[in-house]
View (tube, rainbow, N blue to C red):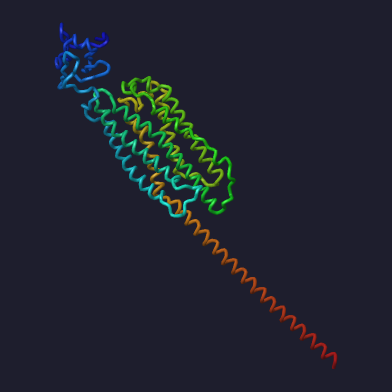
Length: 394
């Protein structure tokens, strides 16, 4: 038995926790089990509750009967779990709206052009749906984070899906920004196919986004389950936060690049999404670079203040998706917008042609009138000259 953990109610041959569950001391020692002061029976690989109504029985061969695992959800739902349910419902609603936007903007109404593929305009909604789905799962996992007596799989799953939301929402923002530039290019090329050169700086933008996923998600999560503060501020988490900053800078550079080439103001929805993603990234940086304050507000900490966790961690993700959804509902399908612009150009060209025809007819009429007037003057001059000749002859 470990000396740094206190055994309660020991006697010569048996030990128990507060008299509820009694075990043979030699059997416990043989199989490495320890009764801890929090009422758990564990040998570092297996853990069982051993207090109140939980009374495991250990056989002489080390087998535990009637055992309840330490990470069982036995406590009531608290603030973290309740708010997690609310955000899960919000994410679920956003999935429905994103699917509506996907159907609206993913539909084709004109022949598909090789340069502007149909899947290009669908990618923002694919990423948005995926982000809302993992956010919904993460929110529901918060229920068992509250209810688990000892933190287990629930907090790992909540944080895995939580950290997935950042690279995916950045991907959605990136695709939205990229597609905005692509659509502006399409509108210009629809008027003049040779406006841009084949190769220029517009198409040479690198994307660092995948690194935030590999460093923050693909890692060992056991220390987080054990609530080790050092694991929450280790090098992979810090590196992933910095790569998220690089990814956001790439998105900003892409928006500025498109604004420069296409001479069109950056849409408000892109500015809002970038701002909200920035808030989420700053929150993550504080959590991993501040060893004291960061751990107190980090989503990795099961006892963290839910106001920080949801207000700075989940809320910006929901708001980014909400901005995208509202923008998608308000904006027209890209093909229908192209058709509208073509009809406007055709109407404008027709009006100009009519005006030009009228001007030409007016000019021809004036020219004809001047010709008639000139002929009349010539006839009058001839008559005058003829009259003068007759007077001279007389």
